Image 1: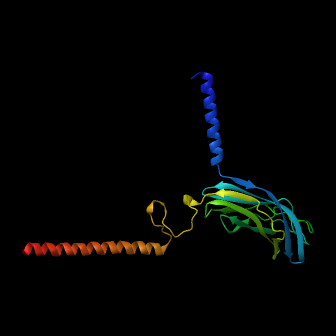
Image 2: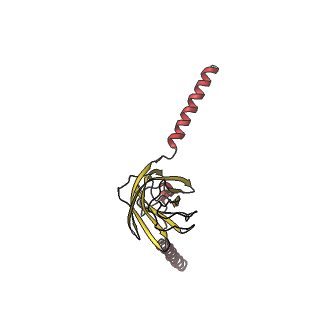
Image 3: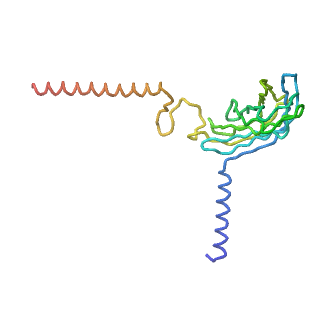
Amino acid sequence: MSYPKRTAALASAAALAGSAVLLAAPAAHADVVDVDYRCQTPIGVKSAVSPIDIKGVKSGSGYRITMSWQKGVSSSPVELGKGAMSPSATIALGGADSGTLAVSGPANAAAIPANTPIRISDLSGSYTPKKSGKVTFTPGTLTIKALGTTTTCTPANGPKPSLTLDVTAAGGSSSSSGGASSGGQLPQTGPEDSAVALGTLGGTVLLAGAAGVLWLTRRGQAARR
């Protein structure tokens, strides 16, 4: 093969390999979504719309999920001093998984003037996939604790997911528990399984003992003959 043709072939092979790597990479899709919060505060109902961004970064066998607010929500009739406000939130899981993920963050690093929108710091939490597949992350309830009071902000507009991750559960299995695992090994999930395993072992020992007694009996009979 001539040098130009060999170079072209190598370039094509490299391009195909690169495409395969891209196709094999975990898929992730993120959107900034507008969330219309209805906040139940100590002084009545407040409302505010804030764009929410949820991102996921691989961390060990799971992900570090971070929820960010681009605008402030709710307000306080009095100034909130540094460290007076503690935020937390939930993220609704959908798709291959279900339930909620709790996220939290630091208290306010600076004083918040009275009657101004409260800016929420980035809130984070750890997510470990329980099933394999595409999992969606949708903004949920925001909770603000300050000066001994609690304000609960609930999405009123049914926001769409802000993040979609194509995840793989530990062991690569997407089925529910209860069946045999790969390699023909029975799953051990707790004391009950351990008890069953010990019971099986005990049964094996008893069977071996019975076989030994039978062998000794036959041997004694043969000797008497």
